[in-house]
Length: 336
Picture 1 (tube, rainbow, N blue to C red):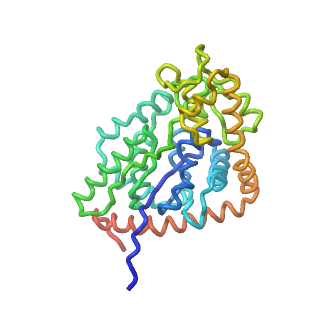
Picture 2 (cartoon, helix red, strand yellow):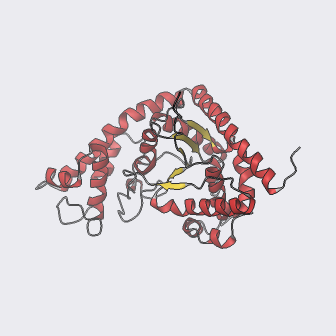
């Protein structure tokens, strides 16, 4: 008699196509996605609809969407193991979004810290999408009955909302949605700005030396690390409160070498920051070089990228359409 195979837990994760990924995106999220494929059933999406809360240049958004998919493939997402798709290629996301908007409370949406942050950043464009996009994020997750959602510490609020809305719907209409849980990976450290190490690394930073892009060449990477802000103590020691710049560089070095923080302190004991920064720059440049080569190769094959996205959208739609049909029936929409 065959044993019943335990179903792998399902993971959903998405990234916005707003230009090239930073080293922070890679370490905090993308680097771990390829590892998750072994143990989980993974769905990875390029979240182009979420990008629209900020006005985009249409041709650039299209280009960035294909580039984001190519970078995910280069970083190890295997379309034979996972579904890789573009959010807008699965219309069911927006169909479920409206139902979930009607089951989300105004108060809980207005408490979202990202809504407050982005409203402050773009005061001239505080649009309805910016306010309701956590409901779309909930739809992204719930439509696939995802068990787990890899999140940074700043996004656990969104998973909480998805759980609340799912519970509210389940109790009003009968059990329908799986309650998702946030999945914070061990290496998913938050990588800080090289220029202002108390702020998260972001490509929207006006200081180009503050972030490393996944496409930066080795010379650029070394130059940016040499300019990284440290402190006047001259000692490589992990202390995020007192030495945020040095501690951030140590975290980056730890990720790419696997060396414990104490080992790193010992390695650079009695050595200056110059030598330390060069060492960090070199391990990063060496780690990114093969990904960059693969990215250039994949991006040049437009038909291959588009084929992967078509197959991914078809696979995702099969799951998503079933869920929307079920939800529409439960809320009383007439089905023909």
